[in-house]
Image 1 (cartoon, helix red, strand yellow):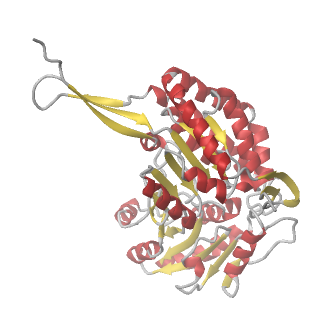
Image 2 (image 1 turned 180 degrees about the vertical axis):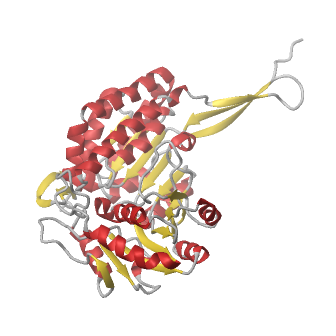
Image 3 (image 1 turned 180 degrees about the horizontal axis):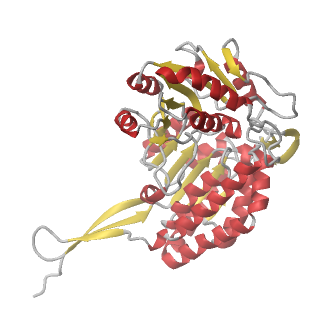
Length: 460
């Protein structure tokens, strides 16, 4: 008797009866086959030259831009992303491909004089081969693109394994990308853990975004193989508000970072640290701001907080506020789909899961701090270190405190959410493993440096 083939199913989180995809999982052999086909295509993609790669990536950007409305609507339907955010993600995705379309023309090395005698010393960066990309559902177009575009620009081929919840988005992205590229240069491999494990075990370079537990496993496997790897994992991000901050502006920024896309971003704010006299006014302003957030159908342009990705995610969020002092939210709206109201809690004990784990939902804890040094200690007290937002009008104080923050990214007078695709992205501690993503850092990750020594031939 043969075992049943697992099924990949993707549902609309705002209407769970709406099934977008239900297909058999391809299995581990399909993953290995995709890598081998990509490996065979890689030399031709590289030797086709910089102009061909640049033109292809530019064509991808144009195709995505032409399909922008369709792609945004698909992200709304499949992953519950509010329409305004979905449109912004698609626009960012187009910009990412345009940015990396210029990368094939960038210098790939340098020339040096030898220490002694004639000749030349050269350094040159070359692609690894096949890039295996494992991506989450929450940014179904942008994250695959900010991994794939630099990998392709540098001359690698790509096999992308998206999260099952974003299968339809990944397949549509692939249909647009593949039109501009030679066969087998970019492949989407739908699947779950089986396919992901097989890809990680076969690719020549691996980039992962997802949970900390899985990311650590990916890092172990690839490190044992001697394969370059980067893993972007969890966050437990803090917003630090000093007494001299514009409290209204800070509350608006923090509310957006808590409630936007139902808090389903690794850069979302989950701890709000009020320093000294900022506590009382911030408590009132932030509670009011969260209560004013529009919760509802992600297809409505006014919606800020749509549904959580599935029922289990909503259960985790509602369990997190259970028994705590709730300042705003703490309810499940009576809507179809998996919704939770944006929630602010206080008087949270140090060992509570909100202060130790990433809940990945629209909930944050308000914490008091005596002074900036105390706020920095609270910020650094968790296993993660992705991003911190700091709110103050006194930049001298802020800059003094910034050096003590053990986080990869710091945003001053801005929400913790938000990514500049041309700058390095990544965190510290359990948030990240390996080199940074995005910008020029990505081009370095997807290539390895070689050193050449050119000495003149001896003549008789």
